Amino acid sequence: MHRLIADNLEAIRVVAREFGVIRPEGFGSVTTEAFDPQQSDIDFLVQYPPGYDFGLWLGRYFASKERLESLLGRPVDLVMTGAMRNPRFIKAANESRRLLYAASYGRLDVAPPRGKARTMIPLVARHLGEIAALCRRDGVRRLDLFGSATGDRFDEVTSDLDFVADFADTDVPGYADRYLAFAEALEELFGRPVDVVTERSIRTPWWREAIDATRQPVYDERDEPAVA
Image (tube, rainbow, N blue to C red; front, side):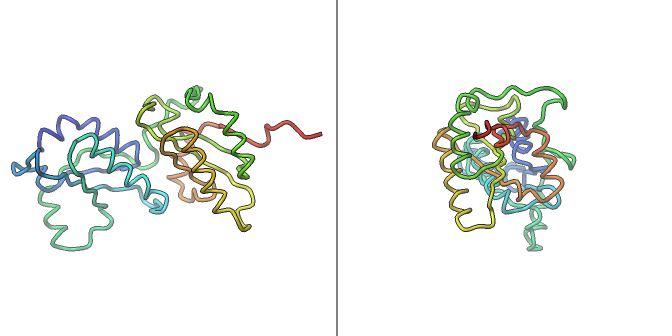
């Protein structure tokens, strides 16, 4: 394995855990003496947990690619192992692939010990009033924060924010517009990328457990004062 990968191995593992990759592998020139750190790109095979919803993970797929390119300073190609179909490509990849990290199925490695209270990060805490107003405007009954922003790996400069939103009236016209308006308003409020996962889209047990392990309540319409 080239020194560029070896020197950044732990950082690559952190990115894998953050974005739900359970088995990243290097392959191609980066695992051989032919790799040129000034000219070569870097190829990774990435495996996601069984039953993941590609629609949900698409944004994270590209975000992880960008994070790795920033970390390594080279163009990065990510190939999903489940998408490998061409026998020649599979043979070539198998000849050079090198495992970088292997996670057990079941959870993302982002949660603090269970039972330990999490302090909301200041970035979110100081905007609770504005968040509540947006939730009321766009029909969000409950909003939870999850992912790195509820742990100790959140970076105020580079990290994005992940939310789970429970929308009301999802079967009536205008729901898609409300969803997009809400997500865009959060990005404008925080000045960074924001991913909004809807409660009803969390279908697989693994994805549910991964989110529940780190979710932190931000807004709940049941806590609103009653209107006389």
